[in-house]
Length: 133
Image (cartoon, rainbow, N blue to C red):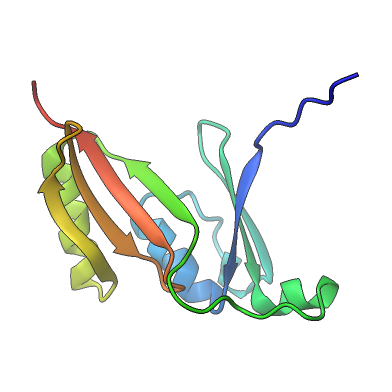
């Protein structure tokens, strides 16, 4: 008998829960009020997709030898917005708020307006919207 596994959530390990949640709130994530001080937070989007946030201390509580990775992140998240102008505006708002840009907005050859921000833990977070035909 084959067992079917279904992707249910994406987990992110964070150094500072408050900083991480502020970044994802800026991108429209429905972060529960007061979650900044919790060691584990689940954010459920209207689509049913879930982002799970755990502090480094939580991970070490069940994985004693865990150490944060060094170098560039290996996790990439992508947030769709409605228009190319929205990519530019959200990127500008995030960088004005002090978040780092990895790729400034550009018209990608695959037909999208595209940009990449870095969350407070260095994970790449893409913003994209279809270019007009």
